[in-house]
Length: 98
Image 1: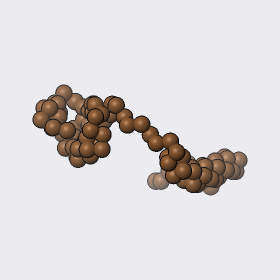
Image 2: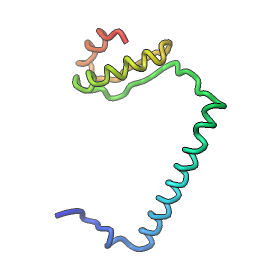
Image 3: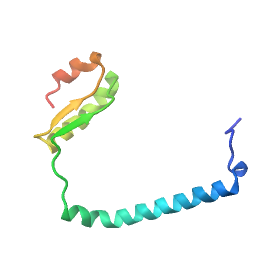
């Protein structure tokens, strides 16, 4: 079966546009990787006041997110952490000290 659209069926101009876009993106990524450490040293990011964890819908997802919530609490002890989840998962969150 495979894909409906193959690379060999792509018009040459579209392939050229994608290749140039990919090259520009890669160049931008390399420039940001070089500049990023120096930029962070001069301008540190402020501590967040609020953190939102989104889409922890199911109990398994929520339980797997718990270590991340603990790490966030240790890293940002003054931040208000909110978790967006289903009402059925709210009891687990209420019992979580983090």
